Structure formats: structure tokens, C-alpha cells
Image 1 (cartoon, rainbow, N blue to C red):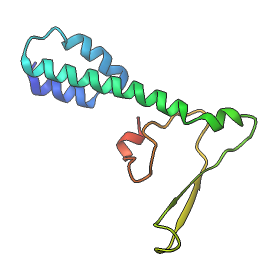
Image 2 (image 1 turned 120 degrees about the horizontal axis):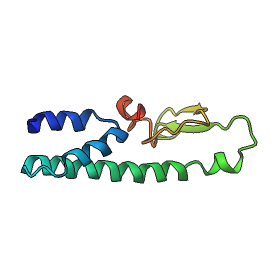
Image 3 (image 1 turned 90 degrees about the vertical axis):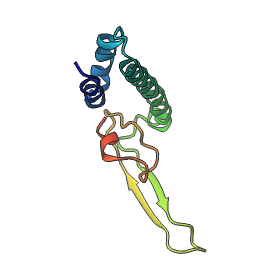
Image 4 (image 1 turned 180 degrees about the horizontal axis):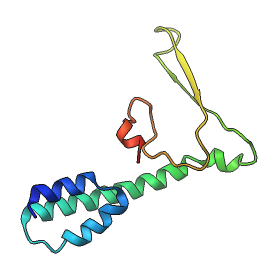
Length: 114
């Protein structure tokens, strides 16, 4: 299998598949594959950190879990002195983790799908 094939497999893999692919290719001695495997390991580590961060963001959901809905709010703009401000509110599903949710301007569609 070519290094490019391995690269494509690793890029297209889900987090669960990535672990299995790392095991499959970590004994490959080609320098390019070694770099790809190391990069995949870093990706998994970063995702584990993100899962912890996401759980920490749920402190209000846990504190007020008896409530049927909890609404998150955010605003955009520079403030009333510098121009218009727009506010938005969202209610996310309780049973789904949305990773990399930090700022709507930073969350890509691809990342939201994780």
C-alpha cells in the first residue's frame, strides 16, 4: 500500500477507525508512514482533550438537569457604542455531544459532524 493511500485512509477515518488504523500501520518502517501515524496519534490525543473540555462545558446542564430546556445565548457585534449587536439563543439536544463547539465563527460543518 502506498504512503498516499495510507494518508487518505487516515484522513477519512472516524476516531474509532483511526485507532485501528494506527495499530495496523505503526509497525511500518517507512518514514512517511511513521509521520502519518504520529500525526494520527496527536489527532486522537487532541480529541480526548476536546471530550474533556466538552464535558466541562456542561456544568449548567448538570446543575439544572431537572429543567426541561436550557438555553445558551451569545451575541455578536462590537457593542452598542460601536454599532448594532445581534443576539441569538439555542437549545441543543441533551443526549448529544457537539465537539469543538466554542464559537459559531470557529465551528466548521465538518467538525460539527464529529
